[in-house]
Image (tube, rainbow, N blue to C red; front, side, top):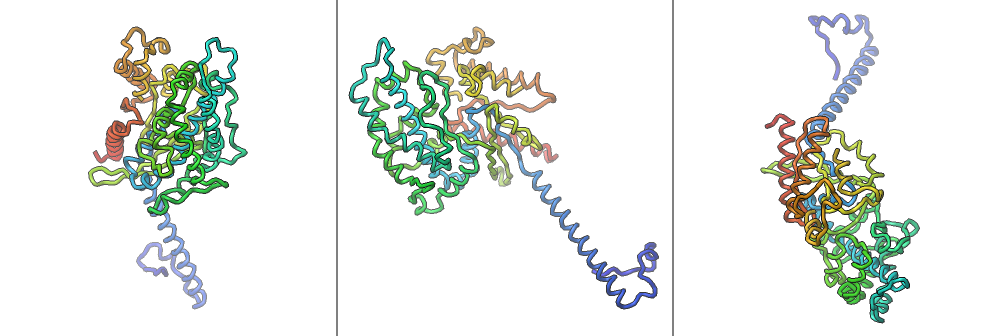
Length: 444
């Protein structure tokens, strides 16, 4: 666009072309003015785009999932995705088959390692009366040691990066010793992308990675199904686990109880299976959801950050412009200690970090006294309802006395592996976040 001058314009004297301007000079000037106008228009367009992007960014609800390691953050995120991103969830559901197979196989191998320790224990005054049946079971299930490594390689871990399958100390001598498998978030996302189901044909296609085929792994697991069931149903094995305090993962009994279904060629994971699946990831996981209410759709970004003490320094950048924090505090762990620091009680760590009700019920029903591990509980009744009421008030008091400014705090006791109850909790969380977001935008 070429500038035109108006003699009535007070700036005309400054901006008017020279009176003796030649045609060549005029053409050069108009070319410069056109280029200047083009650059100005480009800057205006960029500013408008930046303003629109900023406005869109302001409309995104940013949520942090915080809590110590094994507090249920990843399971809560699964529930969010199951409820608010159903299509993608269904496409990825079959991808969890490998993880669930790994959970089952790892549980079996943990029992087999403890069984070998029991065989080798010459100092036991009253040894368990194991028979040739138990020795034969261990031999028949030995291929699962290699299967565990293959499943980890399928999930993206190189053979040289994997620790030895045998723990450095016996599970019964060190119940909290961790041999848990980790996978980097980017490897997990790559695996999900490669194994997602887009049609009926892709659901039957085996996954292949690093020389390992999911079909071959499934065949070995299927061939071991009856022996897995025999191992888990054996009363001497159960007595051994209890006598030597062998620590299995929280959902191990679920996988072993369902071995008849999981250890088959045509196994398809259910939602209940997946919320119990255990897969620890390194790095930050970010998921984007479209949450709808009353016909209006809103974008939520949910960040699942690492919970161990060594990872908490990475939380800080994610607090910028955060709309809500969902803090997971497992109250069933009142009698447990941190894996990374055995001197610290896990429930105490949650309160420090803040300044699953079904597991809690089982522990209390089995006679575990809360005040033994939490002296401040005093002589209150040793039942689930009283413990939940007491801890709810403790968290509220911590917010009141330790927060630098008044903050809204909503506390929902739930079990994140109970998908129905958690779905109702998430709806309450959604409604609260949307109301707060609208209020901040001066829309309510």
